[in-house]
Length: 159
Image (cartoon, rainbow, N blue to C red; front, side):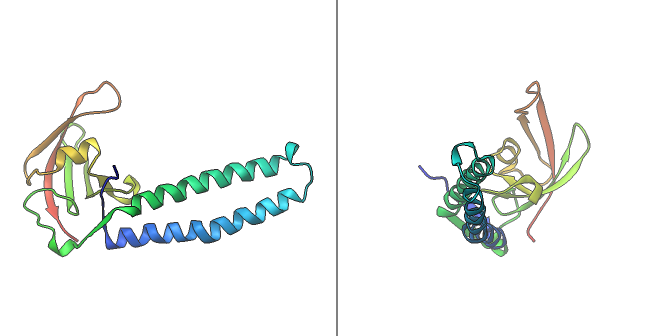
């Protein structure tokens, strides 16, 4: 069963751009590298050829992953996202009640943390969904000794 992916239009456009770049420029670059590596002769002992084949396999896996993520997309309109509680599409500012760190993330169905995206399937994302400003989300840390993590919802907003 395929998981529904929730994205903003901007994030969807970014992923589509990445996918198109891999399908065109990425594949063209690999084809050129393979052509050059083949020109060196015997493929059974050709390190450049083997490395390029590995690179091609990794790129094709990345293409497949992006295609799967984009297959079942729902694009949210940020102007329709309510901010009474944390929900998909909202930005949430949290305070780590153990370390005191304050961070802002957008709750979405796919992405990378370095993009400021917090996945709805992550432990913190699951704990935050449905919480109002001032409430505390708790979850067991999936790393380390499994201690309880506590985050206060400081603010919920849309951009």
